[in-house]
Amino acid sequence: MAAKVNGSSALVKEDEEPMDITVTHTELYQTLIDAGLPQKVVESLDKIFQTGKCKGGLVAYTDLDERAIDALREFNEEGALSVLLQFKESDLSHVQNKSAFLCGVMKTYRQREKQGSKVQESTKGPDETKIKALLERTGYTLDVTTGQRKYGGPPPDEVHSRAQPGIGTEVFVGKIPRDLYEDELVPLFEKAGPIWDLRLMMDPLLSEHFLFIFLF
Image (cartoon, rainbow, N blue to C red; front, side, top):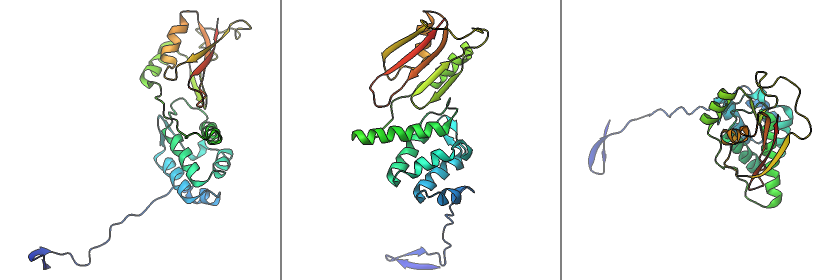
């Protein structure tokens, strides 16, 4: 129908239907609610399960065990949401145990709380294109957990099929800049000899990394 609006004619819809803004959840939504998690935390976690994605990797409900859910329940709502945001933004490309990784994120959050420092973990991560090229060149594996990136250990059979090198073959290297990763470290240490494994230790409470490397 036409109606006068500010002295001019305008079309006004009668009985306009409201927009449908139905929110859908996974079948696990109620299970998480029953587990005692706050509703906003459940919605955040359920959204991760719905999309199935975190940065660099897929996440399913089966990836998180009861221990991780119990630990998350011990946080207040604000803390739990911060932990889940950090988990979602973490690079999970080479993370095999995502439940343990989430527990590690929660542990780091607690440590920062005790120190009274702002909880944040947003340093630039590795260039995944270069990491992929390195793994394709060497045939080594990379396993990422909270606080550690393990390259090799053992190496491919065509590189070394005998027992792990013994005492005297492990080297400790400190003061590794936080923005250095395997794509730059491996070529450097390969000059000293074949690598059995390289473990890059990343303590978020420290300004530098350090590593242990077995050569043979």
